[in-house]
Amino acid sequence: MQCHKVMKEYQMAFYNGNRALWMICLDLDKSLQNIGLPSGKSLFQLQAERILCVQRLAAQSKDGSAGPPIHWYIMTSPFTDDATRKFFESHKYFGLEPEQITFFQQGTIPCISRDGRFIMETPYKVAKSPDGNGGLYSALKSSKLLEDMARRGVRYVDCYGVDNVLVRVADPTFLGYFIDKGAAAAAKVVRKV
Image (cartoon, rainbow, N blue to C red; front, side, top):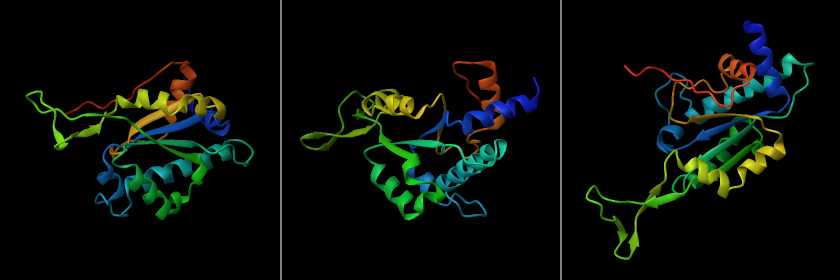
């Protein structure tokens, strides 16, 4: 397969508005803070800038006109939602349009100790924690985001964790290859050493 063909598939998917990015925001501290990069940028900023770059590249692949913006779905928790929204607002959405970002919350589950007992937040209230990456599926249903994606014409979703510093958001080679092969799903992994 030619690299040119893969890139064309990728660019057309973005230009036609068939793509969305789905970020799982579980570690808010890493997402908001300077993680030691020379630029001092947060992970949110780096990923937003990547989305802006991909949108520009998609426009160049056509006639120079911008296609629909890439929609960014950001899963938060009841514990991180407010701070995440405020961070984006205070940074003017890092150059993205506010309406191209949808924040939604994952569910919670009761906290249980290693010996199987409920952990209490107060004498009369069980402590709760986010339901993890697997909470994505029930959050999809309860937030009606599948319907939202269908309404927007989204056909491809790139899902990643916000605290993956090495993630290549909207990787053109990987996603173009995935589209070209007509795969229902694909995963990119790196061997743990």
